[in-house]
Image (cartoon, rainbow, N blue to C red):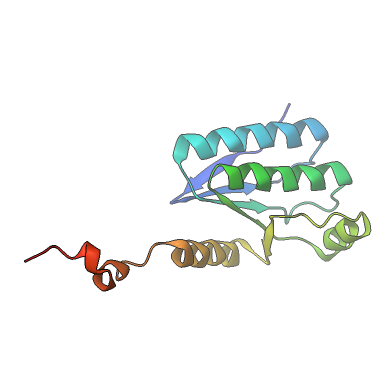
Length: 137
């Protein structure tokens, strides 16, 4: 059985699906990605589906499950490279892909994850306004 490679780039895991997503491949990807998130501590996942011509309901649900598992493991998922025909098919199938953000390409997906992490990072200046955080003279 073929496996989809999961690459680590900084704090992001990049999954570029270049093969037909048969059910077993999708399930294996789900397992591999969860293990890789835990092993690396990455906080972002980008799934590039630009090579996929079609996505069936099982693969669509698997992508949604991957995003949910990733979120539980403290990683945000962005799907990039979705072709118009794939988007139309997902909508027609009634798959809203909850928890999955989308971007047109990998570069925009990386920017989206970086902005999201910056917005969720604690503000370093907050301690300056907190009198309890300032040591007594």
